[in-house]
Amino acid sequence: MRVHLSKLGLLSILLLSGCGGSSDDVSQADSIDLNIPQDYEINLDVNNRGGVYYEIFVRAFADSTQSLDGIGDFRGVEEKIPYLQDLGVEGVWLMPIMESSSYHGYNVDNYYAVERDYGTMEHFESMMAAFDAANIDVILDLVINHTGNMVEYFKKSAAYVTGRDRSPENERYADWYTWKDYNPGPGTSTQGTYRQFENTGYYYLANFDGAMPDLNLDNPEVREEILNIAKFWLDKGVHGFRLDATLWFYENNTRKNIEFLRWFCEEVKKMHPEAYIVGETWTGDALVAEYYESGIDSQFWFGGAEVNGYFHSAALNNNGKLIAQQIVNYDKQIKRFNPNALNSAFLSNHDNNRSGGYAAFDRDEGKQKLAASMYLLTPGVPFIYYGEEIGLKGSGRDENKRLPMIWQEAHTTHETTPVRGSDYQMRYQVNKGAHDLLEEPFSLTNHYRKVISIRNEYPGFRRADVEVFDTGIVPFAGLRFIEPSFPNGEIIVIHNVGLETRTIDIDPSYVIIEEINTEQLRPILENGSLTLERNSTVILTKGS
Ligand SMILES: [Ca+2]
Ligand SMILES: [Ca+2]
Ligand SMILES: [Ca+2]
Image 1 (cartoon, protein in one colour):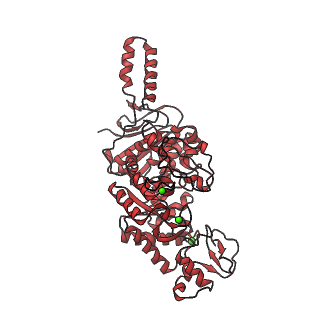
Image 2: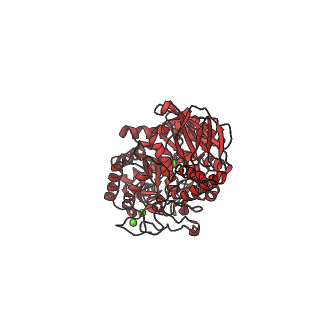
Image 3: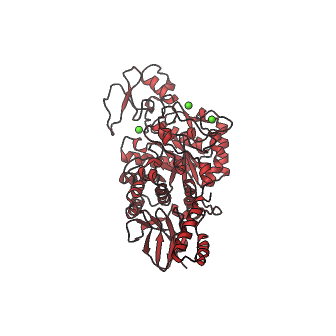
């Protein structure tokens, strides 16, 4: 535990004794040694919930001791709630937990039942009660662009349309999907993709996959059913939803999609005014911003995510000035459409190559920490993908992006079995698990705890406005966050995105209130001069 520290302590002793060479200098060095931090200073006493969410794939997260079959389950998640509480997250997003024939669950076959691999409804409810006791909100992945092809609605719709069974019960569902009695040919992004129904002359709209028929969202009964489903889960205590595939509700028809989102959000808030809704609008900044006109709380910021996104690019190019500008520009862009818009920054999710393998992060864990500091300290509601906090890797096929969480190198008890179809070369995977890394000061996991603890101490980050704070140099990302709850109404965040320690001139009335010293060396602020190590962050406010 003290390996890093004693090395650093020794280094400072050698440097200082090298300067003076007398025994007095050595004792002086000893006193300086005490100023070298031994761990991240994490204040767990203040927990206002700063809005950080954590995405969980139940199948890969934790196998419970009561059902050790290699498949993650609700009881496994429940057993790990103390870990999530310690990490400091305010909420979790559970990837689909409704009954499905696929391993991922994005083709729902029964919206009112839980996936049997994950346990029973009683297990789900027990997990929800435990989350509630831990003061962690749960949002569910809600897939309403399409259903599974085994869901009753689709079976009945198909039976009616194809003439196999024209009962009035089936007729009710005929128009729940979009059917053609001819082959419409290859689809486009605005016409949608049609698939042949079995060996019939009928074709149904299914943009993603034959097992995922698109619902006809213009049908009032479909909309009523969607609200019944939402109510069913809200009544079970979930706090909101992550909406899948918002661009595809009406194939890339922005006006109609915004109208639908507005309708859904308004109806859900009538049932549950505090519900939190975040949309997967997987496209460029300008169009995502436009969708905020719907009144949706949040949308994921895909521009910031993935290997070519702003956060990794900043880390790769050592450019702090640019990322600060990008954060500010995007925040202004979305708030033009809705002043209450909450940006959801993230590095990667279950559809992306995992951030742990991105070049800059793979080469230098310090860069990965830096990226976490940068994206977790943006306005809105940032999302961590499970395993990101241990540097978990996985890329290529979707199955590889959803590999088992690693809990402990020496004990694989709670570890799940990789899903069939994954072909990730496990020799590239990290070895240490979350519980190992919690024991190591300055580990990646403790870094996440540190950054989240700052958000929890200053929950104003969620609603803050943000401006560029000019540091005068390209490697520093300077951001001014303005929010009434902050000391003197504003705090300044400066990240050193560059490769070396830099010193800048700064208004001498600023004082340091928080430091994220990834290099285990404290920032120095004296006489209007700020020195910050690479990959490190300092938070300042005006002294009184
Ligand atoms: Ca299990
Ligand atoms: Ca299943
Ligand atoms: Ca659709």
